[in-house]
Amino acid sequence: MTTIQDAAKLSQIRDLALAPRGHEKIDWALAHMPILRQLQEEFSQTRPFAGMRIGVCLHIEAKTACLALAVQAAGAEVAIAASNPLSTQDDVVAALVERGIVAFAKRGVNEEEFARQIDQVLDFNPQALIDDGADLSSKLHLHRPEQANQIIGGCEETTTGITRLSAMARSGELRYPMMAVNDAYCKHLFDNRYGTGQSAWEGIIRATNLSVAGSTAVIVGYGFVGKGLAMRARGLGAKVIVTEVNPVRALEAVMDGFEVMPIVEAARLGDFFVTATGNVAVIDEDALAVMKDGAILTNAGHFDVEISKPALFRLSLHKKKVREHVEQYSMKDGRSLYLLAEGRLVNLICADGHPVEVMDLTFAMQFLGLEYVIRHRLEPGLHSMPVELDMRVAKMRLSAWGMKLDELTPEQSAYLNSWK
Picture (tube, rainbow, N blue to C red):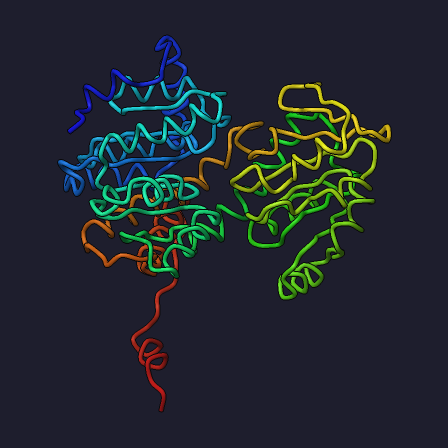
């Protein structure tokens, strides 16, 4: 078995001199995460993860660090890899290593090294998982099925990850229980909508230094992420167009006050394009061929497949970096299109990700979801978060804000539970 000391020697951190700045970032985040602080204090006493090895694959920045340290405080040995090669903050990783977390991550690694770092977390022989995009689970099931049989369970926080795990569960191939944290109310209602809505536009503004006000923003997909993106774009002064394949979501967008049209039509009008579907090539060659000169292309989904980079290459003569995280594609017809963050998650690569208070909700759900899976030893498959955990986290957040709720009277409770 790999010990935490052995694994630490394999860590990819080259320069621990970065750690002081990372510690400051972590301390700032934790100061604004009252729910996670309270859970960490509680679980450091009960230590539900005592003696366990837990593998984590998340975007490694200060808020994620707070979750990893909370899991450690609950008794676990923790190994973490990044879920995106460009979202890692090296100073935060260095600080985690100093605090005893095994980390396999470095910003800007190539795809081969990125994949190897996820393998290194699996070499740690984790018994439970905290996953993002099902990167750990997919690798276990594709390449390490015997090891997958040893996993007690885990939790998954993204729409993309739930989509992949759902496919595995439908085919009967998911070998252990996974908690669908993304589908919990305190995750998708707030993280997907308010978190991405704010942080994606923050990343776009930081990267481009351009005005959103007076522009036309095209939001591709109107799930909870798309709703947040559209809402914030309108708040920033943009005219908003939504593209969708789902008629119910399209109808919702119309009734929310947005125009809805096919992507090829919207492509002629947009100044900013933001994808939020979790699907492949939702902006393809047909749309790219008719976009305005100077259009900005960005992605808020987990993988860099939503904007067709192969199509961009086919239509362009060459590309060059014109700003940090901004690539100019010079098209054969004389236009220029600009791709942010290589088509990866714009909010984590060009900015710092979701607001701290939003991630306090999400990571509290991850923490409680993992504890629930381990304590109850659930059957293999994809499981919904218990409603009582949602209610607990929501109450904790309201309490931290100093807000109180009404309670049902006995008469009201009896009325709701009666049919006569």
